[in-house]
Figure 1 (cartoon, rainbow, N blue to C red):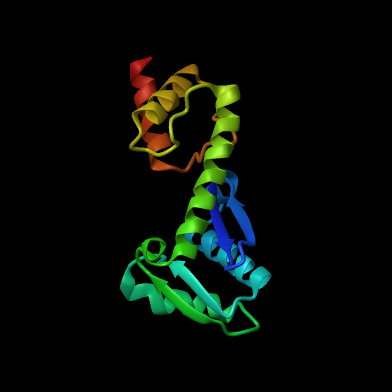
Figure 2: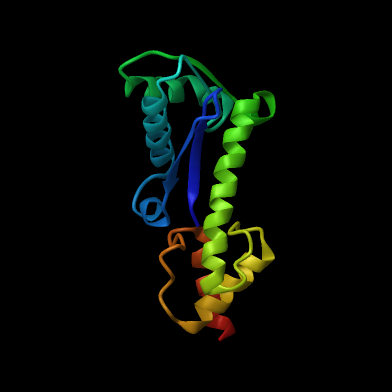
Length: 161
């Protein structure tokens, strides 16, 4: 599973930063996301940053302060829940990140079969994981092994075998 962060400017210029399962397993997802966002902001150097909220609304000022502290310029900041519904450019960046992630899943399906969406609520994803766990083989490198769903399914596979 790949988590993607995308940036898109008003001219349609875009970039993406993928956060790999290995990075997530060995790091902090919130920190990794913030690093990807800062990297994109540095690349684009926008006058204004429009972004979906990272965490609950009460924490937004602290998140913005952490992001701003890593920059050598000061853009305007708009961070709010559901920004992808309010601002077309945020929605477009979200779609770009999702389609990039979906493309990566399509590449994996060619080798690993029916993987589902990669989300824990997806029955196809859960079934693929259970079938894999029952083989006793190490998880492929695209699986986040620290993911609670993986741990639960690994336990279930021991009893279902």
